[in-house]
Length: 86
Image (cartoon, rainbow, N blue to C red; front, side, top):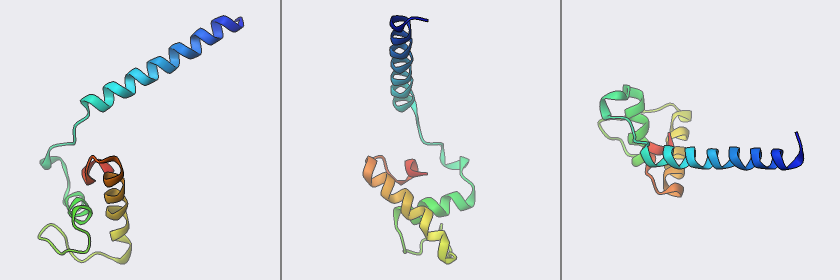
């Protein structure tokens, strides 16, 4: 394989990766509410309103607040909401 063929192959793979990433981002949707198990609803509720006791949450162990807070931060950074953080 000569250098030109290799360069063309690398460019083609990079272009395919960019197109597939754009398509996935465009058509990706969060799952419907009935898809989530009880714990997932609790985590999303804690991510939306950390340290607030809502009907979807229950008193967590000390480590259970960390994943929702991380999801909240990811959702705020990306601007897509806490559901996309999970």
